[in-house]
Amino acid sequence: MTIFGAPWRQIADSLWGVRCVWLRYFDVFRKSLVYYLVTTFSEPILYLLAFGFGVGSLVGSLEVGGAEVSYRRFVFAGIIGQTLLFQGFYEASYGGFVRMYYQKIFSAMAVTPITLSEVLWGELLWDASKATLAAEVVVLIGTASGDFPPFAPFALLPLAFVSALLFAGLGLAVAARARAIEEISYPQYLIVFPMFLFCGVFYPIETLPRALQWLAWALPLTSVNSLARTITLGFPFQPWSIAILAAWLMLLVGYSRRAMVGRLVK
Amino acid sequence: MTAPIPLTITRLTKRYRLPSGGDIEAVSDVSFEVGAGECFGLLGPNGAGKTTVINCLSGLYPVTSGEVTLGGIDVHRDPKAARRLLGVCAQEDTLDSDFRVFDQLVRYATFFRIQVEEGRRRARALLERFGLNGRADDPVESLSGGMKRRLQVARALISAPKLLVLDEPTTGLDPEMRRVLWDILMEERAAGTAILLCTHYMDEAERLCDRVAIIARGRILDVDAPSRMIARHMGTQEVVDELRPGVVWRRAPNLEDVYLKLTGTHLRWERQEA
Image (cartoon, rainbow over all chains, first blue to last red; front, side, top):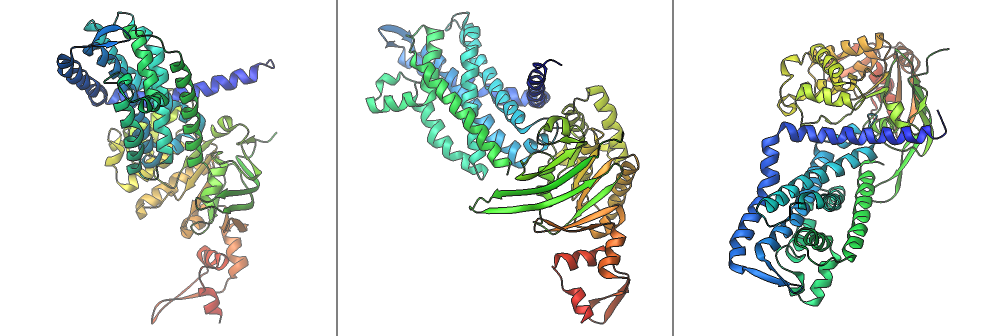
């Protein structure tokens, strides 16, 4: 063994542990494929149909930054971010709480050669993977209908995964702090729904009063929507979006892991 | 060279903060070891610190001071290597209800780097041994409490551990199933597995354990072979139990008498002496 041997072996060992946990989730997903496909994809598809075609035919088109865009294209792009938010948050919050509190599988796995840290990375990466998959289905539908350019499914992948990880971090932090499963409703109504309604999924946030616009920019979904529309619709690039996402990502992933370790380890 | 001792706990102390604030010393200066082919009992009332000892020895909790080694490996310095030697059956139900009985064992085996084919072979053998092979394809939730308990012990054995840790394994088992489990534990012991058994059932400890430690309020009060411990604390004098008014039972002293005397939760002995 060289002096560089030990750390590399440790890194490989940890990656193996995270992979083991991720595969456990994937196996559950695969075994109940129909259930997961229905629960994962029906929601974004319903939003696409209702707002894209329903509301879209009423509104027609809107002008953003001097360019005209059909409402259907605008809202299709917004539903990418909304799907990442809902899928990432719900899988990690309710799903994570059930796994941690009722099934106790975090503690069961953390006394095998897999560490609690690896269990939590596996959890977050799985939640993010599942949300990314759901969002990619939206992108594929938008690409097939000609609303997004053909490269959109590939170009969006990094943004989708990072955003999904961020919202999974929010969900896992909530799961770690909730004393009972009902308490997940607080952040659901106070953080998730406000983001869904005020962060530019359904209308450009420029239509809001200035104070609400600042509030919207402080929340991460506005940045996700801004970058998603830059990639899919060619909207102006707002570089501070990347800084906002990076800050939220580090804060939420770091905090959720610390909070969950604090809950399970004395 | 002799093989390393499956479990050594040296001067383990564990303090932690309570949710309401304030510190509690759950385990104070606890030392013991469990050798290959030995069954060691940890006996104590609820809240005595048994489960905290288990959480420290598995490396899940950091220790305040002291050291734990599994097969000579410090569990806090190298938890991944140390835990390959460890099988744990927790007090609470930690079965993964997203998996069926058989798949559950195979999935758990992968956490120990056991290949799927080998995992299946071991899972089949364990289900046979625990009388669960008829339920292999059933969801965990459909099992009775006693079956879940057996499955959880079986899961702890899938990695063929050098040290098997069981926290109240026979809770909820009927007398027949309790004996089936006892037989399996004695087979494991005979094969050289070290067993740490936490239990409330003194008859179980007396029957299975080579040595027992009695623990209360985080401290070990005494450690010895059950028969020697009974002789030291109770002598050979008959115990007179008044079961109910007018019904008196004269019997030899047992481990439960020692336990109650040492943990001070019962005054029967003093009453009888008086």
